[in-house]
Length: 332
Image (cartoon, rainbow, N blue to C red):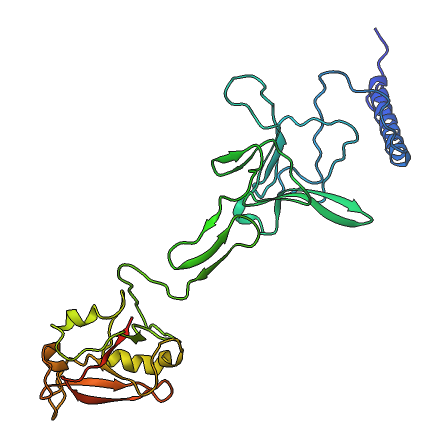
């Protein structure tokens, strides 16, 4: 019969197992201490083809942002998709489609949350650094406005749908003065002036007050070259005695001429003290002055209004018998 060992004595297998565990623990501790003291050495060769790249984490992958995490690439690098920020920003490189198939991608693309950008932020910013001073050279803001520090060269420039490949040449077509304007030209400083006596056709509407510093409305222009009594065939007939475009002055027009200074301008051909027929229309009492019954009577019993002209004082108005031969005051 084989020799049996006492029950309290350990078997050789158990002894060998215990010794192996102790040796492994001592060797592992030595490796940990040695690894902590050693300096990391860059690999001398590229990893085998097909090895997946490792993830870079500064804290648990389930945490929010990896605070302080960064990685540096010296030389070329590849990005299979896009970089996505937790705030919603995207940046990446995609395939450039040179063919005719639909769905081609931009070489560089990026997406930013518009409402999270400050108005001063830039979607794209290229700068130069000279002695610590940074200068913007090319900038695209969040609305798409483009700013360049110098010139932008392109074979074609478009404003809306109007595109040009060169600048227009030649002189301006010219500025031609229209109604009531003078001046014009095709080069240099083109000046337009309002003529001294502008005329307008049609109605002129004013919504508020019309402030006039000079004369407004017809004013005294002169007198008829001949004299006549009060029987001229009516109001329409006396107007033809004045030059074309003028008419016999009314009482209101004479007062307007005095108030705006039109009687003192000179060149009217009227001497002080000259008596002139003017149209008053409404009868004046107690003397029956009614424009010689509408310029149809020439007797002393009927009366009209005469204006004794004076360029300085404005003169005065009187009733006059319709048999008197006077010049008519003309306004326009």
